[in-house]
Length: 145
Length: 149
Image (cartoon, rainbow over all chains, first blue to last red; front, side):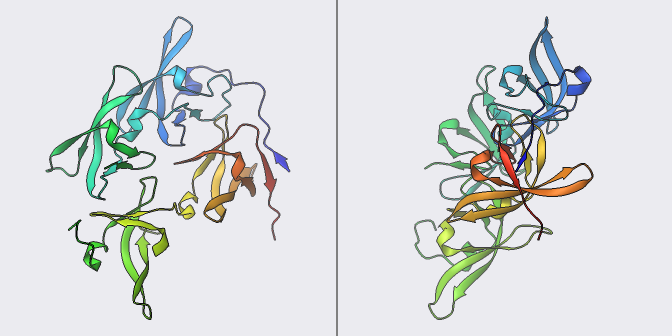
């Protein structure tokens, strides 16, 4: 039997050890790379991420393994960040392809969103869909009836 | 069209194949028909460039939608090549094989580097925390080294 031992000493580093470190969501979806951090005094408040040519601010309390980070390991999130839904394909209950998620309407500064915009092509109209209509959102998005 | 119970090959071929997680698997390229029974027995999905075609039996098809064919089972072949992370975020390796029994995963074989050499390890399904775009393992797992034949 092989036991993959965990180094009991968490990594102690500096900004450059976190720079460009990948962040992975709870389901293993790539959620961006760290390009900056926000400190308030000695407290780490948030990360600035580069994700699909966008800059996203992610609260540090969403990271699950921040206190036992190993060298070169990815940062794992406790939940699925809402912005990872961008670009996903949306199908309705009848199997009609509605397009891809173009924008999410975030609720205040939380990880929740109330609705999102879907667009099929360059010349197609944008459709607004309420969050409650989502039935499955693991890889693609499937809407309920 | 949606109310009509009879559909043609035009309504199926060229449509997206979507698994229960909402993931786009490929395009339906072929229909398989039993010559003696005169029934549809499955479809073949083109997964894209340099990927093998995937045959899906009719029992694994949930419904034929307007633009997509929905499956009722996740094809485990799609987990091959996924990155595997330990609970602390370390990259363990990549999925090489998936062993399933009766529609559920039993073990996954992970290829990982040990120094300069590459080796494989078998990870039981109970050690897996989450499988999505990557595989995340539970804290404190054990792997059984696969002996090469």
